[in-house]
Image (cartoon, rainbow, N blue to C red):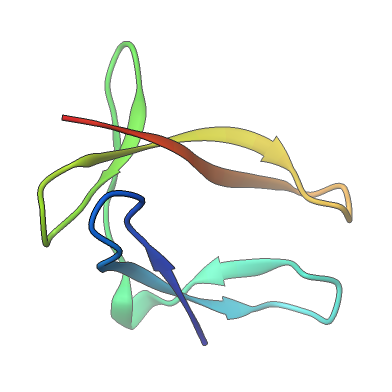
Length: 74
């Protein structure tokens, strides 16, 4: 299991588990965080500092879709 951390405070947002040996992963259901979708952004809200960790859709090296945290907003 690996931690996905807030870009602002470095607190743990959620944990992820490897799905295979190609680098694909999924959010661990026991350590999950809701993905919030609004009109202008999609984000994980940090439970430690309340900053929005903005995510975008991207493609993994194996060709599967994935979310990537790219910046923070208040």
